[in-house]
Length: 124
Length: 315
Image (cartoon, rainbow over all chains, first blue to last red):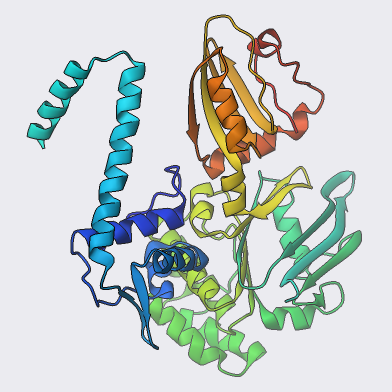
């Protein structure tokens, strides 16, 4: 599981960690039952404050993505994969919505938009 | 838990120059606390007072509850310190300066020092005078950490260092904080501070203008970009405006303590075409607070004409 943190990108650092763990679970980069790095390990690796990592991990536990494994750390919960897939879709939906709102504000038509969408989809 | 570091009404003057002007702040145990400010803002003075290297003209400075003024020895036992330009004995080797310093601390100092220099990849047999700037800094950091201090004071530790060395410094800091130790650093590297700090404080011309948890700061301040209809007056924004600029139809605002309802109200105002909301970067917040005090005299009239000429800042 690799992370890339940008402190200045407008999303709180802990939130970036939460999202990236969820994305990683959704695409099977970490699997159910696998241990994730400890707070200290990840803080060091990312050079971010350990409290920030701890906050992200607490959030991930509340969200049901991680569960504590007695004395060993945190592992990916069994229901996490489905959960993270759905959340990933939600995040993408939200982003699309933002782009569409922006497009509407610059007076683009639905037709222009779908054309653009199709072209971009093919281009990936 | 008592604070790891405390300054209470500390004032320090050099002749007519006031380096610190009635500064009070507390650094909680186990956090990374960043002190920001321009050159000459008083950061180094504050750190040197905490170490007992300088005496304040008035006020109290304490580290771990120990008064800095008359118990310097006790402070140095529990505190690690890296200055901006560490002075080291040039003729000693990396290993020798460790043995030498171990003499003052005793205990496990030598063993910890050996481990630190090997972790940092420092050549034990090389003379200090033959080391690069980055390596010298790593020696200074190793020396300041080998007695396993509860509090680490870093005075612009990474200025002038390359990216890799800065990164190693950051990792060490993060690791210390992870073990419950307290780190106070002064820095110009706002992006680094943004990564590692729990708290930030801003000194400006010797005065403390801000001391707050970084998360709270960023959660409470919004950066707005408001697009307005042609030639209309400015909409009213509730909350504290830290900085605003207007250019033609666009209005850039850094507002503190604005509620969601107030934001919705602004969005639905008739003269407003669009409102873009962002979480501000620490740099934007820093700049806004740095400019705030000097603009005390200007007041915000709420009309566009008053602002068009330039920037208006509000404390």
